[in-house]
Structure formats: structure tokens, C-alpha cells
Length: 509
Image (cartoon, rainbow, N blue to C red; front, side, top):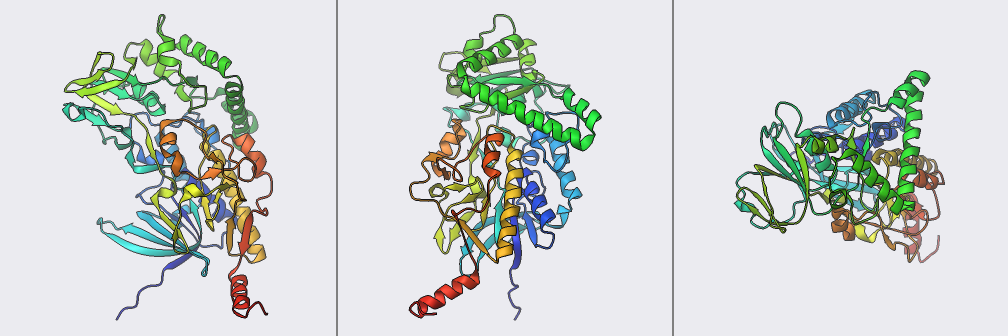
């Protein structure tokens, strides 16, 4: 009889090979070269969002000098970059830091069970081989760094539309864009007004395979600002200071600029609204109804602001190739969409840029000592750990700063935490929130996908270390404080065995 192979053991398992997981793996492996680390990626390539999404023009809304890693300079002259450039950067990071040796592709973690007696997580992993056959493996680890993002990779959000089946053209969600899809000469209606729609519309009107016309159909307007694709000051700083120093100087310049703009818009929302309206008016044709189509009913930064690099979205409207309709959908028809106003939008293709389905922990079924974990009952400690859940880091970036700025803080804090535990012989760390902590949602945006998921997300408190700041410069103040506080409870197996022994002896050592 053949014996069952013993599960592999790792000191740290990073789940997710996107920008968060790659960054975390670099921090961990560089600081602890002797620790056994694995990066598990469910798909067959790294990149996460930047490899998954294939719709025309997919790009970052943040400048790459802050969206890229602190430890690896962004060298391309484009500050606002398309997905292929970002993906090349991530693959280069993997190669530069030797992460190829620790990445395991097509490893999808389905469950994670913590054992306090063993001080380890037992991960159940679906592994898909080259033939598409799936087997189930078990991996054990002391720590999990959950870099799984915040949305479902296999399913985008599309509301129910009346008579959807009547439409005779194609209906596409951007998250599932068909490869080499041909929309040449087609009339397109894009439902939605978020970052995806603002990106798609000018991109579908470029080049030989351009659509004939694209209409953005929105229920409510969105705040949109413009920014140059090429940061000319960055190029000058790089030339003056050299590649590394120029990159870091640009990074801080952009961080301060973004913070200043966000602070001004949220502190003086009426003035901010007028400023954005003025910017939009300068970009739009004379006589365009700015207030109907670009004056949202909410304040700036109640939802994310959208970005139009070099004003490309507005240029499409000025050229007459795109237009904006603000209305509600009554039903789909054979040839397009009937609106509540009675207007009909003709379409060959309908794109439902209607958002994401949020999902933390990558859909992994998490349990602690046999009890299933409900993360909505947890409170976030220092933006990285969850109360009541041992040895698990949750990596979620910022909503009002570049996502990756948070990953740098998390990576350094995790390194400090591991170093402390190694020094003192601890194998378990779990935050415990004081009674009454956790009175507010952890994310402060009113976007649809956030509101739909609010009751499933962990909570935050009203003060550090339980408070979550969504802006890098404000959050950095907390992260500059000690990682180790009284709220973190540490233990080791030896201590627990002694405690058990003492309890069995009636309290006598």
C-alpha cells in the first residue's frame, strides 16, 4: 500500500499573484530569505486585474509613480499606463526578485482551517494540471497573507434588465470581454459612468477597427477630471536626479498633489463641485448641458473620481463620435434600449459597465478551531489583521490614494511583526478588539458595489489602531507607530502546553 504524502509546510503562504501578492512576496522573501514562502495563484499567470481584464483601453486610474512599488522604479514615460505596460512591470518584478521559484499557478485555495493546537493553517487547494484535470491538495502554513483583491474574478455585476433576451445584438460585461472581439462600424451603448465606461468609450473609437458611435448611458453623472498621460516634471526630475531619486521624488510629488486635491475637494465640496464643473465645461462643446450630464447629486469623493487621460473622453464627445445620455432604462428591445423618457437608443452592441461584485478573502471558506469565520464580525487592526483570526493578513489598498501605497505599508509592518515573533519565540498572533469597538463600515465610499457589500465587510473603530484611513498620508501616521500593541495577543505552543498542563493539575505547577 502506498502511504498518503504529507502536506507541504510553509512559513508564509501568499494567496494571489496580483500587484498586492507580488509586492508582499518581495518584502517577505527579501527580509527572510531562509523562510519557506509560497505564492499561490489560481489562474495560469500573474497580474491579477491587469491580466484578467481585456476590454479596450484597460488602464490604471492612478499614476504609476505611486501605483508602482516603492522598491522598483516605474521607467516608462507614461504616468497613466495601459494594462499591458503594467503587466510587463509586474512580470519584470517577478523575474528581478526571483519569485518564479515560489509561484505555483493554477492553485486555487478553497478553504483555510486554523488549528490553535498546531499553530498553523491547513489550506485545501484545487490544483489544475495542464490537461485541465483538478486534484485536491493540502498545504500547511504558519501565516497567510491574503492578497486576493476585493472583487470576484469569475463574475461581474449586472443588474436585471427588463426584456434583456429580446435584444438581438451582443451584450458584454467588460470583465468578460471576448478575445479579439470585432466592433468595427458598430453602434455601441455603454451602460454605466464609472472608470470602466470612461476608459472604454474613447478606446472603442480609435484606429481602423473603431465603432461608428458610442453612447454612454448613465443613471447619474460622475465626477471626471483630466490628467496628462506623460508627467513632464517627472522626466525632468529623473534627468536631474537620476532614475532612482527621480522616481522617488516624483512619487512624493504625486502623493502630496493627490492628497492636496482630495483634501480640498472634501473640505470645500461646493467649491470643489464648481471647480470640476468648470474643468468639464472647458473640455465640452459649446452649449453642452454640463449640469445634466456632469453634475452628480453627491459630493466629490463620496464615490471615486474618474480620470480622462489627456481629456480623451471629452475629445470623443467634441468630435461627435460619442455622446452622453442621462436617463433610466425601461426595457431592452430587439434593436437597443428604450428609456423611461420614451427615447430609444439604437445599438448593435450593449456593454454593461455596471460594476463589480465585492468579495474579500477570495471566496476562501475560513474557519478557526472548527468555527466558521464571519469577517463582518471582525474589526480591522492597523489595516492588516482581523480581530479573532490568528496569523492572517488582509491586503486591501486605498480608495482615495493609489492602491499600492498601502501594500508598501503592509509589507513593512508584516516584516516587523514576523521579526518580533521570531525574536520572542511566538508562533501565534491574534488581535482582540476592546468591547464596543467596530462601530463603522471599513470603507467610506457610497459606490454601488461598496453599498451592496457593506454588510459583508469587516468593521473599523473610531481610533487607532482600529481606525482605517483611506488616504496614504493620513494612514502613514498610524503605521509609523508601533506594530506591537496591547491589542495584539501572542502565544507559543510551549506556553499553551504548559497552560494546559497546569489546568489539568488543578492550577499546581
